[in-house]
Length: 216
Image (cartoon, rainbow, N blue to C red; front, side, top):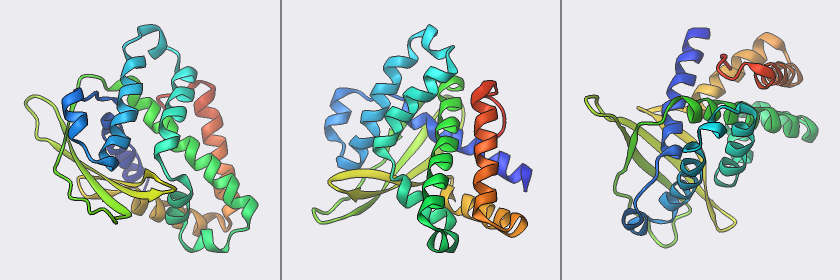
């Protein structure tokens, strides 16, 4: 399971590349609302990534990535989906604690990608969206010269007038499905959501204290 989880975290880094790649103004104007939500984050991240001093300060990067990513991600929905029945049975305080630590885990993963990957490009694939659609799948490809494109698709939902990501699929592998399997196994082994949260909190604290490139 450890190798499987580490491999998926690596794939998630590829997905993060989408959020550090700028688009031309002409292309941005042609994007639909769900695509524009992702593009807006990409511009903000790219502007700071060009500053060498900024990219050497992981704590600052982590804070900045959180501020950029959070408005475009439905962490409530993701948390409920990755826990499934565990979420439904959990008290409100444990739901809040889990969402906080899981959000930190995801932001740390994006932050590592923000530091490590820079020289890539992204291509948005065509999107059909009806006026009354509340969900969409934004299909993209990560491009690198000489290599096959990597398919990265974003499941998005319209929430309070804003399009937000609630799942990422890299070459058909779902973030939500993968984490759901992981947390279900952890729940069986540890016996409680509180124990899962404590484990997440400990790993987050260790990573943010000085191990930004360590495994999640």
